[in-house]
Amino acid sequence: MRRKLQPNRGERGQTIIEFALIAPMIFLFLFTIVDFGIAIDRRLVLQHAAREGARYAAVHTTAADIQQKTADQAQDIIAAADVTVCYLDGDDANSSVGDPGDSARVSALFTYDLAIVGPVLSGLFGGSVTSIDMTPSGTARLERSVGGATPCP
Image (cartoon, rainbow, N blue to C red; front, side, top):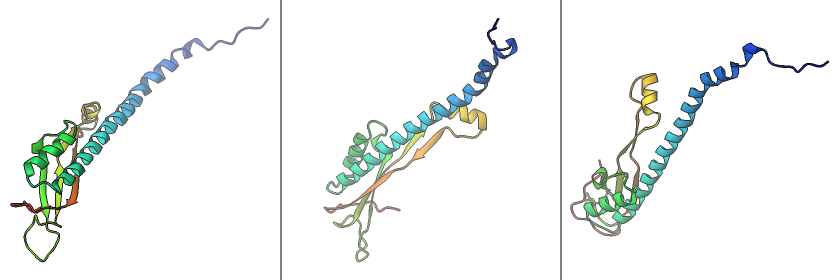
């Protein structure tokens, strides 16, 4: 007579216990990937908005319009107050900024809070690993003169 081979009674719960020990690390790893993926998406949206703002700055002269255009392109991630517009002197012959041929730089400031894993990483490792600062910028050459242009630092 043949008997079926059955695992020992003591090994039945071993797989469940091993999974219970490994599952939190697997989920933390997956949630970290998702959270950083969202952060990268936000960074790309902001980079696009800053470039569009710089293109807009090449032909428009008021900083408020440029800031609003950049904020509109950012898909409600930032407000117009988070956008900085400054001008670079392209030719060393004159000391004024805002002439045609000079450059306009548009940059946006945004802090992404790690919503999924930020509190977990902060609790495990201490410190403040709950946010990522992002400051993308775009530059475009001016086609018109800008009066009262703010020079870049």
